[in-house]
Image (cartoon, rainbow, N blue to C red; front, side, top):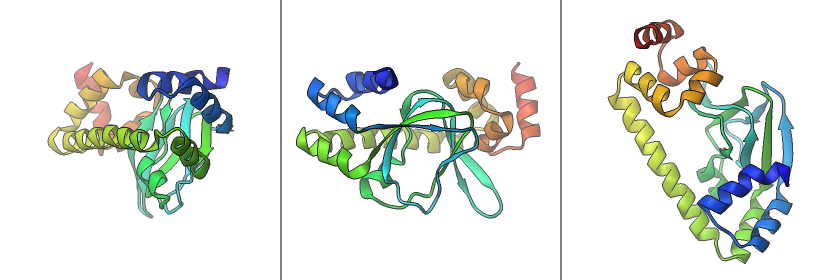
Length: 191
């Protein structure tokens, strides 16, 4: 059960299932370990697994031939799949790279939805997850458009200090859409 401690806490607090449902759900998850630098998901691939980060650090980004833009980091136990594309069985535009060695619990799409259907909780789980996702995405987009890079950095300092402690500064600069040199100047002013 040690591999399932974090995900068990998630379901107990965020989305309670009965004990039998949880046991069946956990029996379907597979533990995967990935090395630093491993790619978990690539753009233009179908999101076929629901993945839960148990341990480690992951960066999520968009890329083209010219550059990569970081859009999120995962540093604590949480679901890391592109939930919209997972639910629609569609291609994602996102990429995910391990910034450390990671431990991920994953479940294939069809067995997951079959289980949720059996326990009559599939629709509410998906709706609840999407509502949280859309709310967070809307807040992020609004902040990235209306706030200066220094204000965004200060928000990270207050709300996501683990990012600043765990993630290389050039990745933070990409997330803020500034150069590493500009980030360095902002850090000096806020110290």
